[in-house]
Length: 118
Image (cartoon, rainbow, N blue to C red; front, side, top):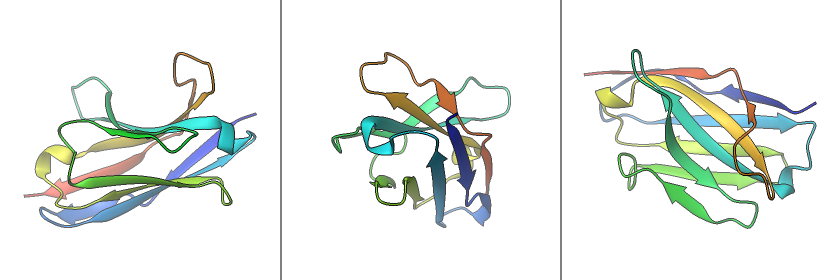
């Protein structure tokens, strides 16, 4: 079955950087779009960034210009480089996968905590 494992979260001061990684297994990685989502305490989960199987990229307005998503199909991994972190970026970050032709992300990791101190 599909397994997604996030890593790289932690505590960082405002203005700092973190790099999140998501290792995928149990799928033909190159045929999946990969996304990052986050959920802050008391809020709904929200979209952060996505990279398609063809390499197309999209970001939420709140992270555009600060975060960079990339994928390594040889390593079955997707990265999220986060720069210029703000207190409002504090959340649990989730990696998710979506197969070609599927309307929704249907596999999720367990999440990794990112805390930005102001």
